[in-house]
Length: 103
Image 1 (cartoon, rainbow, N blue to C red):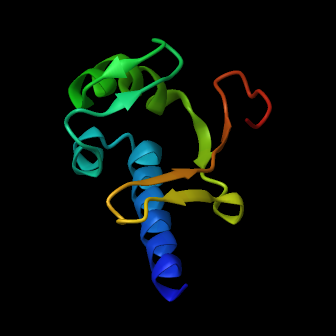
Image 2 (image 1 turned 45 degrees about the vertical axis):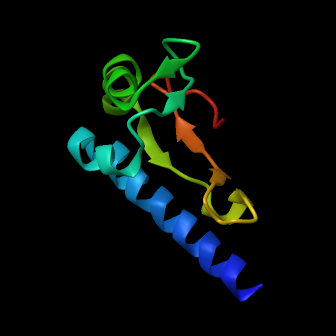
């Protein structure tokens, strides 16, 4: 169980680093957080394949326009593979351009 807790702490730290990058619109700082072959979904395209494409087609259109971007760390959910080579984490909270509701 201690190993799982350590892994969750590492996932939380990853989200913290990404949060700072999104808040400061630091694309260069975010690049090392993602594999070159990342697959994402978002506001402007259904799916984007590749880190460079994700930055150009998603992040550059969104990050500078999000108010008060924060992850909901108290509600962080994680999935870890048995071999610890794959991890998934989810937790989001943001206010949009128009001051919309949290999602």
